[in-house]
Length: 436
Image (cartoon, rainbow, N blue to C red; front, side, top):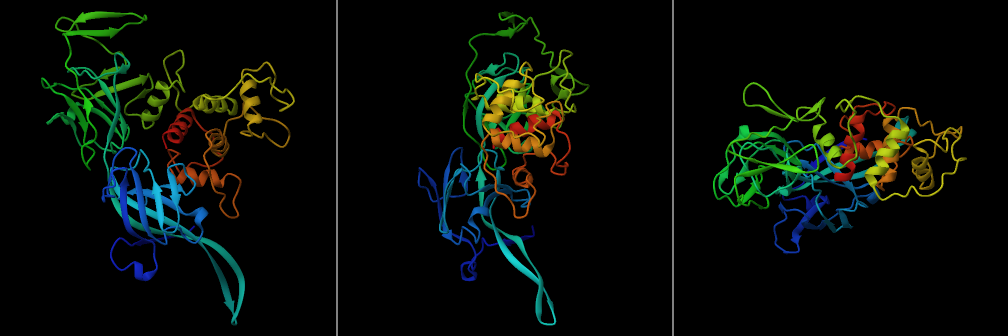
């Protein structure tokens, strides 16, 4: 599909008959300020020619201002978009929108191209092209959803120097800009990891009598997370049993076995023996572990590069969905290679009844076969009910691949459609689909 970019934010675009904004506002406040987005802000765009010549294929996209090619796009039937006509678009911006960026409309259109031979049109071919229009700019403020004490393993509003905290939320950006305790900024060397939805900190000091924690993502300070003053100098530390022991902070040192301290000031969080905070898939695997979607092996490893078979993949995505019913009896005749006594039979039975899986032409499911990128995306999209559009003249999997590439569902967009998915690939896909 050919891409044609047109920036139409400047005056004069209306005379050209191009899509343009007449006015915009954020609800429910009604402020005439479309550029500032907080969590769950409803944005209303009023304009002309906003829909495009092929409305079902038009896309509303967001991208960093510095890299307009890094698009995150929604079709008009996405749940975040409540209205899309030629004169109005009403939507809730995605939680993982870049801290600051551009709003882009993608308008696909069909064009017939022919070879002219002696004045006669020959070998005509209809192509699907698209034009990209930058229609505005925005700032998305960060939002803290929770703060986790990594030793206690639960939400906290208390902060102590020398302990590790996981600040979780939205729109933090890709690089650290600042953590504020009231008007005091945390030393940047105390930040272990910074991702768009998780910031890991190890404060070397905490000022006295602070009352608020806020994140700065480069566009502005986000919401306020209340900071409470500890009632005493006692620290409660989780033990291997369900109980806890209380230690005097002045006389005892707590050790987190999942944190390794290297020479110098660098601190690395390790969630499995082979997965630490430097791992490319760390954020997804860390999320999957906390949500109970993935676990490790008895030796404490995660084995991220291990391929996942079709039965394992089906179990993982169904359990991530959580609201599925395995109580129905298994129909042993559904697939010739799925035994009633197998551990995966209930998952296969449910998935078949919900049209999530169809199997192969020889009436087999091939549970032990490695799941491919194409197969995995199809199953996952059906489980989570994510709508897709079939591109013209496409393979059966193109609708899923196109959506995955547009929404950064795959860690690596160059991976082959028939390549096998690994454990790290699977948890990444689930993480992205559920957080989209």
